[in-house]
Image 1: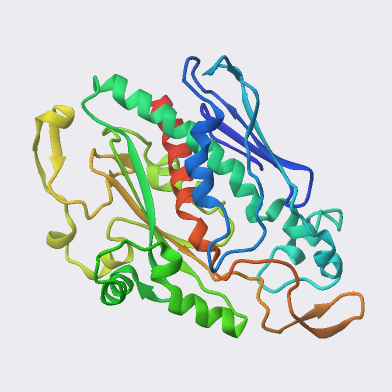
Image 2 (image 1 turned 45 degrees about the horizontal axis):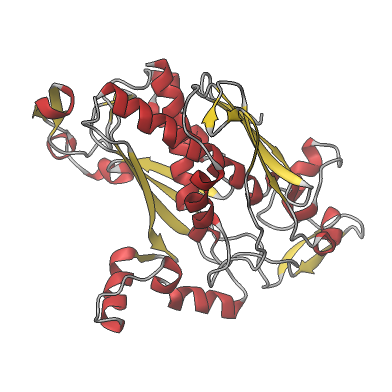
Length: 360
């Protein structure tokens, strides 16, 4: 379905080439300061335009059409709309009969009996992550206010995600290479850090995947439930809704299978200043024990596949002709769409935690 959450509830709607995309957020407390300017930074992080991303650039100006009055939330459902303007639907005319490898074209046709909107991927498009980012902005505000209130301002909520690997090259390797090229220590955007890999893929008409790591600090101990609604379960549920996600791991993740218990266990030490109890001295578990936050930073990593739409010819089936055919995907696409995903991962984590903190 298109709705996620129990108390802090998020519903997304729209299609890639429809008139608009949007989100309805229910369960937002009244009195939270909120204006269009609050969305600017996160929306800019998701935008295309840098080398390796799609040339489709939209204005992405949020329209707050309900749930806000005189700069504050009212407690009513909050509705945010984004207009779609820079579309080229003709690029997708052939894809009704010739499904793109790696896309949802075939499965959508089966599930919706051919009535789905195929333009730009329709409702399956990464365009729908824009309203998710908007919901994440609201969720971050909810979490920041709740954490500050419950700790009398002593603890601050912070969610930060970044690419740690792209095209099989780690951030550490890319930074060393960058430091040699830029001895003045100037920090470089991700598209510049991994420029050699991106340029090579573009030259080949191919694409690249990446791994994004997210760290959430300031979460109190005690959020989450055993089993079905564990913190890991809820975050994995939300994160796998992001188009192109292929895996997720928490803390040491798959590396934990190669460790001994004495190496992986997080021992507890006194930590009176943070939450008056104890805290794990290490963070191999990624901030969660038994599905419940333990007070340490929540740490997880997300694997994104390479962009499915590539210029390189691929073999697929032409349902109209009844034969196999070569397909070079038309349209405007990212060489590595993961360049734009860290803020989306942050948003999903914030949406989950805003719902869980309301249930605590």
